[in-house]
Image (cartoon, rainbow, N blue to C red):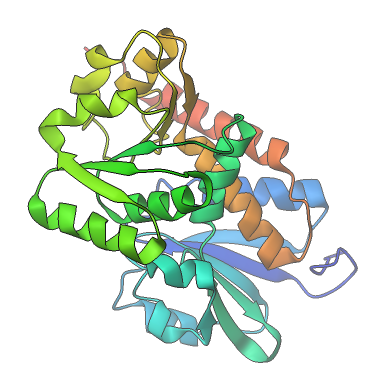
Amino acid sequence: MSTGADGTAGSPRRAAVLGKPIGHSLSPVLHRAAYAALGLDGWRYDRFEADEAALPAFLAGLDASWAGLSLTMPLKRAVIPLLDGISDTAASVEAVNTVVFTGGGRRTGENTDIPGIVEALRERGVERVGRAAVLGAGATASSALAALSRICSGEVTAYVRSESRAAEMRGWGERLGVAVTTADWDAAAEAFDAPLVVATTPAGATDHLAGAVPERPGTLFDVLYEPWPTRLAAAWSARGGAVVGGLDLLVHQAVLQVELMTGRAPAPLAAMRAAGEAALAARSAREPAAG
């Protein structure tokens, strides 16, 4: 028998992750593990490849069985004009990664990346820092700044590749109430003096910095989860520093999504993390060995 959001018998419910590309998304693994642990037998979670052009028609075609959507790039900003409202958290970075369908077909946008970063750090004992550094200046970096606005009492230094990116980060800092200074990417190794370093760059971008990890590093939050560990994360751990990884963020933001979409809390963090770890291990086992 199917179950509704409150766990009682009811109509089947649906949710999915949208983006392009979407084939490697771990969201289905995490959400399905949550449904299983919560006993939501009538719930299903799928993935659909969609870009900005396809999004309006996709949303228009959804029926009342849909509870919510997870969104990845390039849809986090494109979806905003299509919604009935967004939370203050989502508005702070102009990015929605979660859409919740409520009574009357209302579409509400939320951002669980920001509190997900905060919760992932809190889980590792990082609740307050005096200063921090951010490597990179993309969309994830703005979410990182928003998270740091909640836990960092002092200055945040962003290491970027261009003056235009530097101006963007300073602008986000002003908007979010964070004291942001910027520095050239070539000086990124200087970031490691900070008690918290958040690496928001693509795979391989920080590999050359692995040899610059100090003897007693603080905490590194590397938002990547595949491949894992990154060279920087491995070097950081070898020096005894605390490392928070991209899977930690992915799981914590998914926990919040499950709670928003199903109305059930707390979501099963341990079961979701175990499912994500197993999926990544299976992928790694399928990868051809390096020659």
